Length: 510
RNA sequence: GACCCCGUAGCUCAGAGGUAGAGCAUCUGACUUUUAAUCAGAGGGCCGCAGGUUCGAUCCCUGCCGGGGUCACCA
Image 1: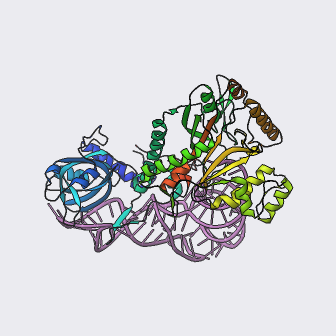
Image 2: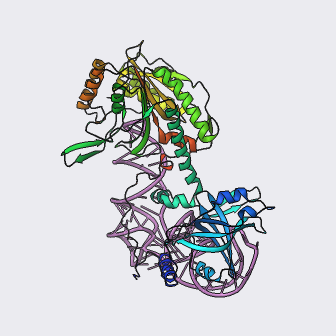
């Protein structure tokens, strides 16, 4: 056996493992037949009738151990929660000896009967104890105390963010609220699917590896296909493929899409994130706004049991129809105290200056509008708000506004100060789409590496003909933040992107 | 990419220019209804890494690595 252990506790556990094997204990058996999960027992136990719980089998990870000589109390944790178990040396001498070699973190199965202790805790009195998995690394020990009001006070919670994100499995074991976040996220996605499926829209899968990336303005991750010897891009959006499917005759398609954007990382951004996009034929953005209101309220009620979301500071955001709809330029005009619609680039520049909005003097008109909005308006949009009708330069895939050709029929939904959804009446005029792509190409030639790339096949599809279509994208991670009150997108992504850990010695063993 | 903050035991954190401390966890002993179990004792640290200043650095300085935050980019 190597002596090169990371620390004494790991070494001790490896030695215990050896000792267990020496005594004929199988440290990694194959199955264990459970009769109950912890929750079921706690929910169904009745003091006047323990009959139904006279013989139960539970399994879980040891989270607390209180040894008192010839009797021991321990808590095991399963997917539903924790339950206390009790074992006495004189009843199970051999297994009690084995227990001496067990630790917090080990996974065990307990068979026995349920009773209530003197201090009132429903507990499994062991008639048998089996080891199901020996844990070889110490777990952060989180101690809980219950005060007079029954509130749980957590002592020294495992809280180092780096460790929590890098070792999410530990985070999930010792921080029960983390597990709840991801259950909520999953339920939200299920509810979204159900909503779309009930309306007959088809869930589809489109390429993640794309020869031409498109559908958004962002820098891509580039990879290479060896056999075809060609560059491929991880998708930044699935929009152009979904529209091809509408051309193909599907009248409602959606995809839950992992997208990849080679951009910075912060509280609202992870390089790989989840979007939901949906396209419905013969509809426009007005219809979509109504749908989004209904969708959000329906899903939120299903997930949270009430039509309100929650911010990281605990503030509730009630969802009530109709969500206010404000036109982008009017919102900015209100914020700066003068109309901005007719302003030139130069005039917008000086407005930015007056309101201490930091911009490059060479910034385009669209860029200035975007900056004014995101600095002066967006942070105030806590309650759900549709911002509608964007300048055409900002939206190369959206259809021109039916009454103002300088605008497009587009809305973004803001919630909690974050952009949650982006949608348009989709541009289906191939001539206009080509002109917009060409404008993007000019921007790209001018050094804008986030400008869109011309996709000739997509134009071919539009020439075949796409019916009038409404399209919507929802940021799933951000919506999950508002479902769970998370402060950072990393708190709703199981394994957020981290730099590799600095070199450390891998675990040594015999 | 820029700036600010952080990095000390398995976990949560103190600390100080003279090479370290607490609580929990761990180990030994006591304890057959405990629950932050208790009581008595013990072990455990390249104080993120590398240079520099100094008689002496974990502490001061510089660089690097990792993380958090703000900004930029973006959703």
